[in-house]
Length: 295
Length: 314
Image (cartoon, rainbow over all chains, first blue to last red):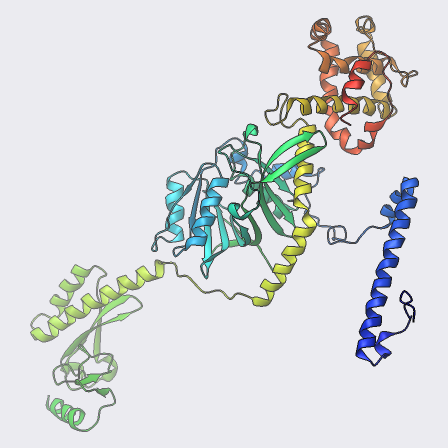
């Protein structure tokens, strides 16, 4: 048999294993080559006539979760954003009127190194934040009372399990709400290759895709953690990107190369949040009123 | 009474269902027992004159048994509620058990103390928040882990962030003199903006036709001044005079520093200025829909220098 010729047979009918695998490999290679040729041809044609490429891309739309999503009637669009704002005469209204945030970050009563490291990084991200060591006997209620007494606006508690941070509780003070997140994929700044160093400038904030009513609340809650007016000279940007209910946190330094290109250098850390529940009012796992619980 | 001794003999030597025998001594399980021990003195069955203190739903009661009521078991115990205050409760026990044997009186008071203590401790524990264990659903965790991975891939975070930043830059969210933008880049953005604005005007002529007429009426008076400094583009030959005004106004924004006269004119001419200020406000909204407009052909007859400046950067 000539080398380049590939027999067109069903390989599963061949009983000799060596032969079978040999032919199978050849068939795969031939298939790949055909694809490669086809694409090359296509590229050539499209280089001559760009409209064909446009047409191909227009017809070849991949169905994703994003573009096949059912319409959510709580969606906050540009049209109803005004009435949403009226509704949003909420707990965060004070912040958007210019009240400066003041944040406490602490851990669960028993905490370990990984949690401490994470808390340290978190405090470097959030300006005007204080890290407190949590005593073993200081209960959540007492911590909240303390924070309220000292005019803090937010409380972040990093909970851990098996010596690793696993959850994040975010209490907005003094009237709530309280959000409980699952915390995963923590990557420290120093482990990110080519990371930039953070400066103490107040960062900009990007909140992507917090579109539904719940998302709106959560987005405002995040926004209320950071100073309302950023210091642009720092060129630092903090991103909360919501995709399929996962909230990805990133921090970058950027540089505008031109009007159409911006370079990004990551500062870190990275982590991912997923909302487990949202409670009205302050943290109260026993008697609190749940606004939303993850199914 | 006589039967006291009989009862005790039976309990002690034969059988008592409340009795527990241990290595160190015999204990009693009867709820009315004052000390918990099984002996002659503190046996609630073998004593006709007896008193004890019991707690019921956080309330203290003094129970007293006398030989006078021994024949009616239903009324055998006299139940007296003790005050919640510790000192008052002790005083009450003293008062009720006056002339009683010292043993009973003392033991009753000790019981009051002990019960009070455990009630306080119970309340404290109730207030304390307890940590409860939560199940980690392994299957859900596994599922979420892979979903997270896919979501992250779909999110294309860097692209999204870059897009958002550029949009902010273009929509002038960073102010007129941004600190985070290079001077050259900022100049480019301003020039691009200017181009876009002009193309917007040309593409939206029809939709704005009605507004133009209104503006015509308003600006009729100012036409004389405006006409002195008009810039003409050959695309907009047949458009109304107000469009010409808009063309005329746009260079004012960017070239204000070079043309002092012009800027002075704009300042003096109130109606003209109002128009100029209203135009850029509209821009960002229109821009989103008409981005393709950026490449509309426009030829300037009298501004060759500017074109050459920003051409290479496109």
